[in-house]
Amino acid sequence: MLFEELRDFIVAQFGEESILATRTDNQQPYLVLATERLPDICLALHDNAQTYFDFLSCLTGLDNGPEAGTMEVAYNLYSIPYDHHLMLKVQVPRNTTPEQLMPQVPTVSHIWRTADWHEREVFDLLGIYFKDHPDMRRILCAADWEGHPLRKDYQLQNYYHGIKVPFDRHNEFNGFKGELRELTTTPTPFSDKREKPE
Amino acid sequence: MCRFRVLCLETPNTKTTYEHSLILSFIQSTLSTTLYQNYLLQSEPNKFSADTLQVGEMIVNMGPQHPSTHGVLRLEVITDGEIITEVAPHIGYLHRCFEKHAEHMAYNQTIPYVDRMDYLAAMNSEHVWCMGVEKLLGITGQIPRRVEYIRVLVAELNRIASHFVAIGTYAIDIGAFTPFLWLLRDREHIQRLLEWVSGARMLYNYIWVGGLYYDLPIGFEERCQEFIDYLQPKLDELDTILLENKIFIARTANVGILPLDVAINYGCSGPMLRGSGLRHDLRRVDGYSVYPELEFDIPIGQGLVGTTGDCWDRNYVRALECRESIKIIRQCLERLTGDLKRTPDFDPQAACPKKMRMTGTQELYFRGETPRGELGYFFRTTDRSDVPFRCHGRSPCFSNLSVLHEIAKGCMVADLIAIVGSVDIVLGELDR
Image (tube, rainbow over all chains, first blue to last red; front, side, top):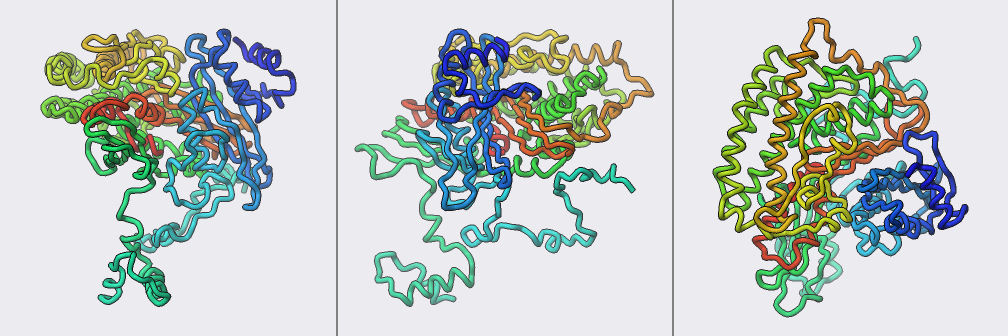
């Protein structure tokens, strides 16, 4: 099934309003779905004999930063018998301030059990809560870790159980005497040093 | 100092006065060390609670510091005597922030980090990463043929080495020591070959975006051919000493049976999926690099000594894949000494892009077959930057291990070791 056919399949079953956007200028075309319709659409894509997306390859959370104010979850589906690929996405408001609720996305772990751990990982690293997930705990970071490290505005905590977390005196301890070089680059138009105009 | 220690060791039910707590907080703030009473007396976090156990059940923690967990993995197990009723893996002890690092580095600078994810199969990880970046840049078709064949050659050598560790350590888990020593002896030859190629034994940084660091050293093709001829009979020896071994079969056949539909639903891939009987290999399905031009079979588990999808089948698939890799290496060597012979003017870095700036915001999920299964990278590029906005690694072990509680329920504690070993996890990649 081609991408357009899959799109028509979803539109025929769930209506035009279930798809918020269609991007075909990407290397892999994708659909942005209405967040609350996601589990129904996924279940239909998984169960229907024409689509049969039985393998959830990858589930990725993305943080667009505090300026954009949105977060995304991308689902890469794969159908083993038909050899089809499909990328789906949902977008949720980021809710940056601590008073607001964590961004919420409905779970798909009842459709593909592999989403269980992947959603826990997204929850841990990006702070997106998956509604109706059976076991929403942190998975990679320690259970009492503060904050979600892959958020763009993440600040390290200073101490964790009395252990200093940012290791900022690394050079001092290791006898490094040279000039400090900034390893992290901010994406400016000319962040590449080799091509900087004189 | 001594007085403080005495105070700390008082049992919690003694009267805690205001002064007492003041002294405690004083100790905490001035010494800024962890009071062992507060943190180390029980393992945490726990999924199960001792309050809800049935009569006769108990919670046992296996790992994180135990050789049979193949790294730092903690299994929280509820057992009823010798029978396992529940198991919950706790991972993350080796989390090294790969994705955060990748967001701060150019694509080519991340290659050494990719090596350290799956440190037993670094060449395969590099290969997938570089192909993904090349696809983003749109230069997939411009890679010289000789470079592609060298990449496949070293990746398959590394695949054999990785499977040797998997099978060897699995044999140790089961209690057979000799196969481990034999396999590590042969793996040593592969490591030396790869050290000759790249200068490093395990973490190579050899495959670059658009090319290779060096061409193969002079004489490598002949030495590699000799090694392959030496290795072929050793695989027959492996079959005899391990796979046909009566004790090994008794310990692994009909243990940890993974049905195919469960495997697919849990996202298992690689030998886990093929052991359950599905002929699914991304080298064939996606046909990346030069794999469509190469002849090789995809072995699957057939339940020869037990049921399809048991621990023996998974291990059998790995052993057969070593033979297939040898086939691929033979064909690569044939091409590399034939029509793609080394020439004095061959530059392996000729197609390396001088700048890696992407145009526009692109998103791509690229996947490839490593010894453990489907390794994928999800990229989102930023406009006019060589640093990804987001990079996510989809680790095969991560999904493969998540099926553990499904197949380990109801088996014996000793069988749990056999099951964990047959999943073939590398914690560096699992925790990223």
